[in-house]
Length: 240
Image (tube, rainbow, N blue to C red; front, side, top):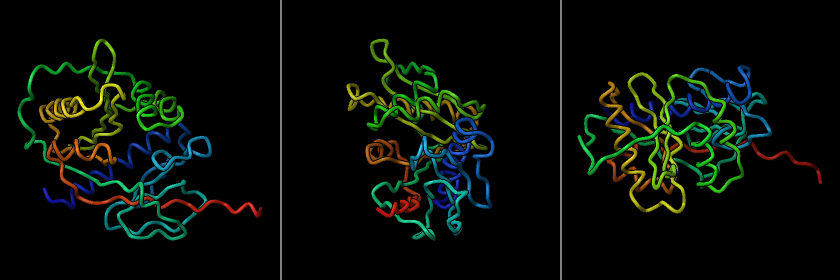
């Protein structure tokens, strides 16, 4: 599969996650589905580029700014009308074909299924923000979504969420508790998750990488297939 198709799948998965978060976190009217644009509005209580946002498909032109659009437009384009870019939070889109994933990992991997609230709360802690995604994640109801985790000493230490879109396994919200980092837990967790996805008929896996996650995903043979750039609505001038 070529890079352009993996980029399309990665963007589509991210957009569907944002739409699901908006649906359950703010209601049906918050979901945004334009041609080549998917996501949702979360409003002032969740003004985060990773929650209050839409994703534009590769090759498509970002929509002109509009009050109905959320805080952030994620796009592969080099500009978005009426927006300012935050280059420091740009995310590489990554993907691979699951047929290429190693057939086994060293040792026994006992996956657990943490609650969505637990996945959200661990992400809040991992990225050093006030409780935000945890309460929203607890509300999600979507048969395409599954949670995965590894426990150490009877404590959930590493988590991820997946969203199935066709035969693509979108990997989202990977996080490890601070005291358990640098033990290879995320590598073991994601390898096991991808093996399960392949056995269940999934053809590809895609994700968007944070700076901390990028080395892990490269080690797992994900390849960078595009760069999602963040364009945020300028702050309102208070006139002060």
